[in-house]
Amino acid sequence: MSIILDKVNFVYSADTAYEIQALKNINLKIEDGEFIGIIGHTGSGKSTLIQHLNGLTKATSGGIYYNGEDIYDEDYDLRSLRNKVGLVFQYPEHQLFETTVFDDVCFGPMNQGIGKEQAQLRAFAALKSVGLPEEIYYHSPFDLSGGQKRRVAIAGVLAMKPEVLILDEPTAGLDPKGRDEILDQVAKLHEEQGITVILVSHSMEDVAKYVGRIIVMNQGEVMFDDTPKQVFGHYKELESVGLAAPQVTYLMHELHDAGIPVTTDATTVAEAKEEILKKLGR
Amino acid sequence: MGIIKTKGLIHEYIHRDEEGNVESIQNALAGVDIDIEKGQFVAILGHNGSGKSTLAKHMNAILKPTEGTMWVGGMDTAEDEHLWDIRQNAGMVFQNPDNQIIASVVEEDVGFGPENIGVPTDEIWQRVEESLKSVGMLKFRSHSPNKLSGGQKQRVAIAGVVAMQPDCIILDEPTAMLDPNGRKEVLKTAHLLNREKGVTIILITHYMEEVVEADKVFVMDKGEIVMEGTPREIFSQVDTLKAHRLDVPQITLLADELRKAGLPVPAGVLTREELVEVLCKL
Image (cartoon, rainbow over all chains, first blue to last red; front, side, top):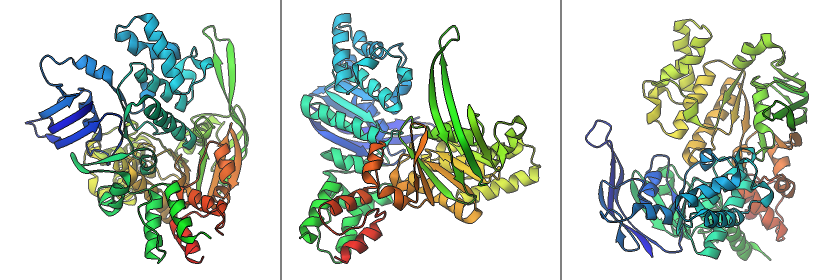
């Protein structure tokens, strides 16, 4: 299973004075079971890109293939694609609306027409998988903390049993513990259920810690597409497009420049610690 | 007395059912005593729901104390006749730039506040020019705000506050929605206003890195101030911070891990330069 983007272009407000080419000639292959991070400055095309993956936005030209099927084919069932590719928008808690947490999570699967009982079973499993305690299932979602609300919203998408989970800045506005909790849960879903995860983030440290592959967007194009170590090795180019490497990567370069013979490709605290202890430990 | 001072500040949110009977009372602030000197750069940390934003809303009299007192520039916020003076004295910048910009041209947005309080036209233009200059956005004065990046929009929002000539600016998670470059721009602007114009800055944030250069840090939990000190004093207590659902900057964390692994690294290392220096001496 995979998602293939073949020469995808997208133009906003075509043939007007406000014409903007938001995506330029995007070629990507996303394999089943990957954990991918997408980074890029505001307006680089990240959100436009992910909206193509579940057919919310239609490419101006080019093709998208989900498991080998052309999603722009006349006979293709876009509704089923949206069930398979779950998209969690920025600040998803703004979309909560039901009177209880449980009803809110049931809404998606109920809409899929699988019957009330099935929907409830799925809602139960989804709420469990994001680590929410049972005593709040029948509370109003509006009485919860920011981090809890966000997990309810993610559960709402998980209850639709997606094969691919796309999260657009899932940790914006959360405290450090809340950030770790959400990303740990997502990583666990990826490991235990094999869901493909695509994480859009402004936090280089988070991306470095969790993903296996990073796609860097700049001005509607793919600038880099590689492992975190390789991508963050280009930290100077990243800076020129408004991004950065994790703090520890800079530190390793500075230690190296100061004459300590460390390798410079660490992107997490654990890697940096190991390398420094190897060279300086006794 | 400092520019912002509280004594035994308590704020209760009262939840009522449909008949107006009290269902529950939540103590968002449970007796806060702070005293912030004029000209300081102060940061407030705390997890979601710890009371930071409630405290901020007391600083420009959006909320009033249930018990205790809050003085802004010596004025008691509970007294209605000071309301406009307090709001002019303590300006507020919020998380989402799109919710704070109202005009269709940058300079008109910045001039809105002064115009509202009856500043003469010539002076309004003078203030607009100075404020836009102070946040480095003067060359965008005739642009439309919706074409700006997140960091630029947030700087326009700050300019709108600066144009009111406040003694103190409260920034409530101003960088939560921004990319790395936008975060850097906003932080730099806040420090510049503090250094060059002597504006007291109160920064509320979930990003530990942004606090490193503050004069003083307050940590809140359950509506109380639980820690207070310089960034170095605060960040040298890694485990205590984690217990309050917070974190330390990535470099501080690495230094702490190295120390626990036996390297003679002092507690509370804050910057890459410091850590490079320490490691080079080993």
